[in-house]
Length: 210
Image 1 (tube, rainbow, N blue to C red):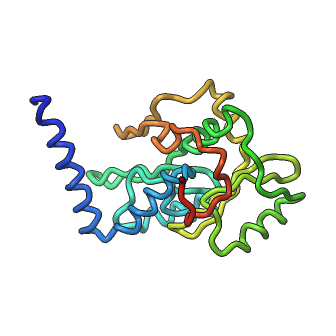
Image 2 (image 1 turned 90 degrees about the vertical axis):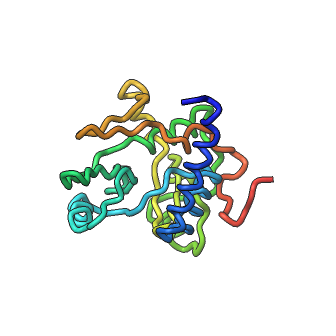
């Protein structure tokens, strides 16, 4: 392929991607995804489940599993693995949140927006917000947590920042997460490769960077 054709092919691919989004009625989902990148919040998820049994039931009954999408199961990130050639489908743990929190805390803990004595107090405060910030750093009983609002599924989750220590115990982040069946997913995702600006912890989605 001639190097001169590369820009043209990239533009064509981008145009095809936009047409695909419009044709499948995914305009708002695309907008929410771009906002998640702008606000440097953790990677978006398409669903959240309290138990693995609930997640397995959802996946088994899904006629078109969202291949390579993230879901939360019991508060932990998993990727949907699916091969339509043989209808193989499962969930696989993925350390994308660990990557994100490691990047966030590599230069020290970010400032705290709110402090609580118990998790129950923090949950009540978070649940009482009609339009929470994309993410907010809080403190519960002296430990730092990240309160994340997934607007696309109207889900709230609170993660301890200490999750990032899992990467240190496992010898550091891998350059690639491998999935069974020949599937591959690179890590960490692009949304965790830039350090989250400390000036906007707790800002709402209506806010914009200067």
